[in-house]
Image (tube, rainbow, N blue to C red; front, side):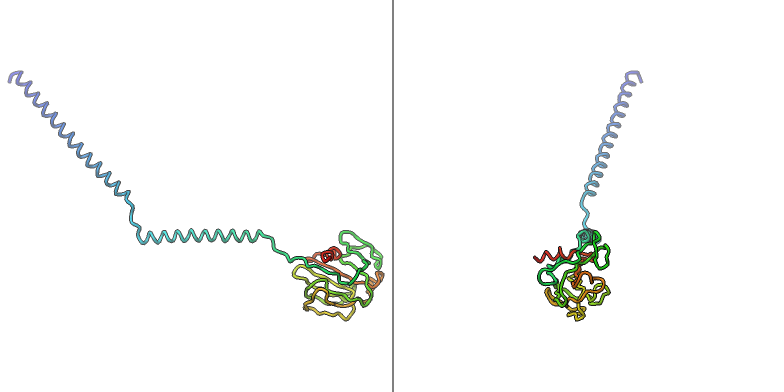
Amino acid sequence: MNQKERRAARGLQIVAVCCCFCLLAVGAGVTYRAMDREKAGGGETLQKEQPVTAVQSKTIEIAQAEQQGEAEKTKEIKETKETKAQPARKNEQPVFAAPLEGKTKVVLAYSTDHAIYDPTLEQYRTNASVSLSAKKGTEVKAAADGVVKEVKKDAQAGNLVRIAHGEDWLTTYGQLADAVAVKEGESVKQGQRIGTVAAPTKYGVALGEHLIFAMEQNGEPQNPMEKMKTAE
């Protein structure tokens, strides 16, 4: 084979090799596109919504119920806190009337913040009540509606009666005669007769015949002369 023929044969070999490479490239491209389409189709399949099964539905209902329960619990805690934050309501102050009719003279004043002179004991002391001058036999009346809490005999105040006015207020009437007109547990009305003034005990003899009148609110002494002003 001469040189010219050799060159022609080599050219044919080169063309054949190139055709093979082209065929391989086309085949690879087709295979890649098919694989890409398959992946894309799988992605679309995954993106489709899954049907809600009975188990999933039950789980959703439980979650909603738990959320509702937490909301109700939170509301209950909030209402409890608000209730606790509110101050307890107290009974309104009764309108107190004077236990004695007409104008009376104060023979020993109310004084809890400083000592005052007691002519019977001949010394200075504080006083959580007020002593009102009244003749023996003068009627003593309930200062407000209430319930008789106690009737007893006291060494210093003589016969005394305590009347509760609601849960907060208490009035005490001392230096009463033996014939007390009320008994423990009895309901009384404002102005109702509860007894009469007696002769004073030895602890108040220097004051003359008088009524001891005291008032408390939640166990704390109050000035009766100031509280009775509300009746005016």
